[in-house]
Amino acid sequence: MWTAVNAEFTDEDARRAWAADAVTWGLFAVPDDSLRALGDVDGCDVVELGSGTAYFSAWLARRGARPVAVDVTPAQLATARRCQEHFGLTFPLVEASADDVPLPDDSFDLAVSEYGASVWCDPDRWVAEAARLLRPGGRLVFLTNSVLVSLCVPEQGGYAGEHLQRGQHEVRRVRWPEGGVEFHPSHGDWVRVLRAHGFVVEALHELYAPDDAETHGYYEIVTAEWARQWPVEDLWVASLAHPATDSTAEVTVPWK
Ligand SMILES: C[S@@+](CC[C@H](N)C(=O)[O-])C[C@H]1O[C@@H](n2cnc3c(N)ncnc32)[C@H](O)[C@@H]1O
Image (tube, rainbow, N blue to C red; front, top):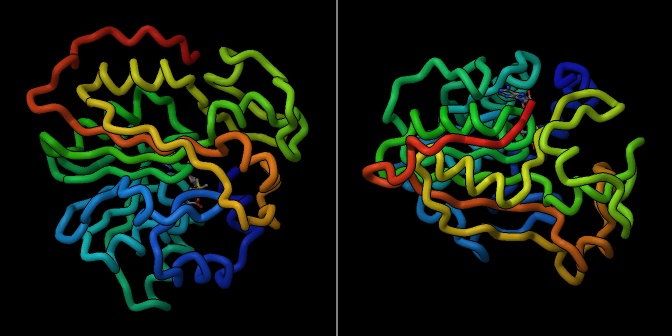
């Protein structure tokens, strides 16, 4: 699916994302400076899980981080490579699934995912992998659709409405008609999974559209008006406890 999506975009689209100065989150570009979700990344080893064209890693590299971008789709990484050449900014690009990353244990200070593994991988498996890759005390920061959006978008695509379209358990693992399997755990599910893999939740930022925001021209998920009333995205911040507090807890979430 992501090979097909990649073909819909030009390198110019990817370069536009790469060129942005500020680190922002989500559809309505909420500045990280206003949330401080990432903290100071200067000198940090960062792994991005499901990086796509790797613009988020590029933003972090400009702030002094040493990113490694991991993605399962060769076409996305090929775009990332061309952007690296264009901007003269290189860092490792690794072709792998985010739930099985060929990188050593305890090798990163920060793991990030912006609509990457956070949406497209089995939560239990990729969060376990993030825990393995992080050093003790390392942080995991990830963005995904809000729970409400996943409940309110119409089955055939288009903007979220004001009524629930499905039960919450139906979106834990969901195959949308236009293709792709996504995972949308509830907040309780996320807390259980994070704790089971040794993380302590530091924050859950629920992102809304700013007052002056306009509806996004390409991603038909929510209108700006909707997102001024309800959160469009959830931004989770967790840190790997040292020593792990709850790593033996059984994960009881039925993803399958
Ligand atoms: C929406 S993009 C996210 C990247 C970027 N932040 C963005 O918003 O464009 C989703 C990415 O997740 C990748 N992806 C899907 N399943 C994956 C998996 N199992 N492991 C690693 N990456 C995966 C896709 O290849 C795609 O590049």
